[in-house]
Image (cartoon, rainbow, N blue to C red):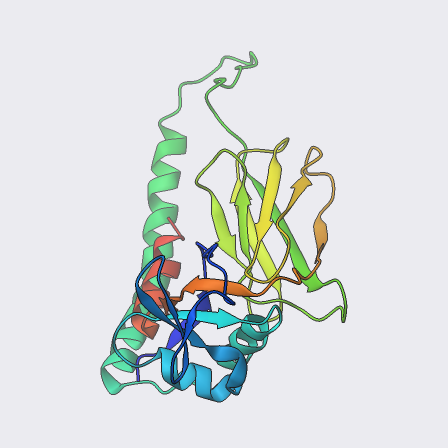
Length: 236
């Protein structure tokens, strides 16, 4: 089975569950002419097995169900292929030389800078200082970590997802913006960034008591060698 990172319902359906026609494993939605699987009657393991089968699925989840499932997926050991391990080893072996090359280029650029003759040189206004925003997202009821939460800087395309322990790290040039924090089954909130003076943010999400209906989106987990390649690229 193809490993995946997390599941979500980014576009919840507004159709009424009570008005749908009952089927063997859920109800039929006349609004979108699809069968909506009632995942609330399944165990978390059964849901994981179901959504990994080929094809799209619309489903009904309880507020806390997706959080439990995503946590289960994060905690499950993953198998690695020999091809992935060989590719990963190759990438790791080139990291030291890549760093050395980067330092050499940097030294050349510095030596080529014009002499100031003892005078101060003003930096160009176009140089932007990037800041690191980090924190953790927890459940408002049981205070447990929530993995897979979408963290985005409002008005930009900069964003990330929380890790298995609910933590996140985000690099941005915005130090006076707003974080938009959203996750299926929870109320979306906005957190102001005040001059980035707060090094760590503890963000509390309150559960949304409404049942969630809609097409299930499965975010596939990238192979090991691709994840390592992404980390190598970030060095430069």
